[in-house]
Amino acid sequence: MISALILTRDEATDLPGCLESLTGCTDIHVFDSESLDDTCRIARMAGAKVIVHPFKGYAAQRNAALQACPFLFDWVLVLDADERLPDGLFPLLEDAVNRASTETVAFRMRRRDFFDGRWLKHAQLTPSYVRLLKKDKAKYHREINEVLEVSGAVADLPYFFDHYPFSKGLAFWLRRHISYAEREAEQWQAQQVGQIRFSMRAALFSSDPQHRRYHQKGLYYRMPFRPALKWCYMMFIRGAFLDGRPGIRYACLQAMYESWIVQFARNAKQFTNQSKPN
Image 1 (cartoon, rainbow, N blue to C red):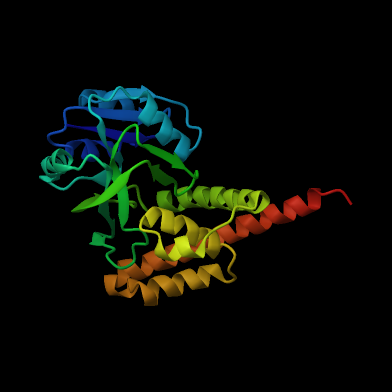
Image 2 (cartoon, helix red, strand yellow; image 1 turned 45 degrees about the vertical axis):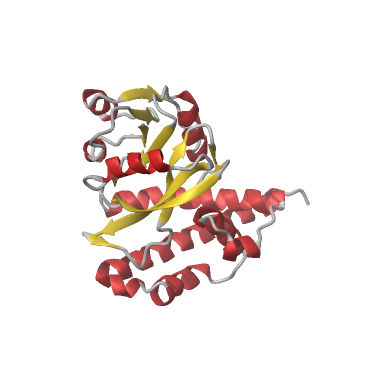
């Protein structure tokens, strides 16, 4: 009833655990961005179907995967290699699909992020994600922290799946988020030039958490002192300190990430101004 899609790039460390968590799934697809390690070999040995596709962007890669993979079923569970399904969850997802109304084209689930062995219950910024969807009813946009547009009703499931963003170590997380920050800054500059309008109403009241976050980020980018604001928000409004030392450390890392975005955006703006003819 459900196919699985895993997007990869040099995921030989995390992919085996992700594949093992898909107990009961008979149609697993790995859409790989030209890995240089054993990712593809590991996937094929586990019985997954593999397609290698050059990376053009995060949203573009997800859209290409949904179009190119020969899924056996209409419903697709989308995972990253550092994510896991808890034991016994896959049959429950199949049951949810069997009982879904004709209007429902996607399901939203809660994701548990882990750091230093602890679930970041309070520090996690976006706990809900659409990951189970009909393949022809969804499209991604926004290349960093991509947003999923679904043509139809989205239902909520009372289940969790797990995410281990620090599985490759803190240094890897830092390098990846420096890259993310640079892309976020470029995206912000493009939005400024394109005069994209962000809605306060959508930022506060949209029923879709990802759509709500998209508008929140767009409005948030216009605010001063963003790194400090993000740290205070995570620590005292969301209660990151309730997650103990991992929650406090994570709030500090997120504030650092925000400072990188600010710096990259400032550098890009200075370069643009210097390039303008006098």
